[in-house]
Length: 617
Image (cartoon, rainbow, N blue to C red):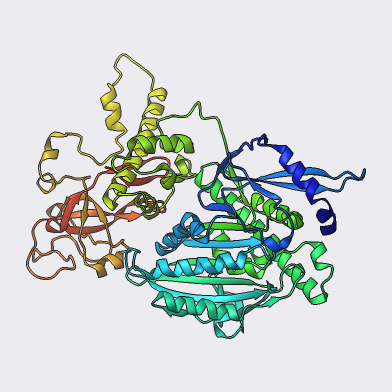
């Protein structure tokens, strides 16, 4: 086949040149999900390859790439066949690994630092630049983790293993065999793999170079040092203060090969190729299944009784290691980045088409729907274009850039972002500080809560029958009250401690050990006032089993020592929910809070759709 291309290079270049700029535009059939980014990197064309480039990124559509192949027509006159592929981000041959890191990977690092699971895959034909890309990205990750720019204290641990078929080896321990076993909780453990704690970027680099020297490589038709195994670098970020950790996986997949490339190999190379291609096929099914599951869950498109897609993560050692990143039953937040590396040479056009087809299949789009019957003021109904327009008009000064905050997300997808990631994206914009980012996030949530409340009110109005003695609208609003704000705005000018009332929500300070015993977050701690301490009658105990009502001696057991600190209120606990800044009201889990330990009033809004309470501006 290469001889055919060599003989017809002049005709190929002439046919490509005659195409001109008139290419059929690629129409998107929906919006990409926020938890999966599929990208393509085109490596530079080597001068000694002797073939022209067959891959052409479109200048008009930055995420579409065209491949022009020369077809050996039976009539004897070669003709041109063109194919186009669409991904989320495209990096041409002039793009640097630093650009890829800043556009894709640095967000994964922050995501893992804040307790999420970030996963990066580099996929492609052998010799397409996967190992080169991942090696440089690992060094940039080390710089970010160790330069002190990340907020908070974290301990960084590294494990690097090698998967050859179903066998696993520890690359940081001279390729010692390890076992992949599931524990009693169903989590896959790397039994026998050593985990190293790192304190500086040079130590991380040394570990990465040491692991690379033990990785399995072999000579193939396309590459003298082809990676014949999957290398998995796992970075665990532990936060002892909160007893939580995040995970970052950087995975250099083994190079895929076409059937014509393995024909000249021996039995060992052919067996390796078969195992590699099988594991890559399972990986594709798992990544795609997880993306479909995330979209059904986050966009509210899952119908009652509808089953989530089946994810076959037990069918290969690679996906078994990453089970918690694919398992739809996992409560951990996950984000995945795929970098498909391609060789632009005309001689490798068949493999490049397979790689791009694989990458395009990983994109799971949220189908575009007509929204004419939906409230245009509700953020959860906004498209990406509507969301960007609202960000431009309402972000304040300095402006928050729409492409930084919501490059692909729709309104409902942005509302599902963790608060830390939302504010981190805002602070990437020049001049935007933490306070502006927080206020802007709360402003969006205020609009969402208001739209939900208005929706509920309109439903109640439609259902109510007008009569001569019908109640006024203000009475209907009182019955549908969904906010903790005081109905009378006049007293709001007074300090909140002078107007304490049942139903008010306050933030308060509590010793860390008592908060940990109750399962409360470090900050903020919120509670709903029920009644003053002296109003308690009979026997009452708090959530820790301690008496909260006055005893015979007139004292209250609050877990505090020393003199009386002032008035106390019996309060119901507010516990963190599953979505960002969401709270659940635990009415029967109660504590006594000293007025002196209360530091502010907090306004909560009830969201009927999620059944959570959210902090409002």
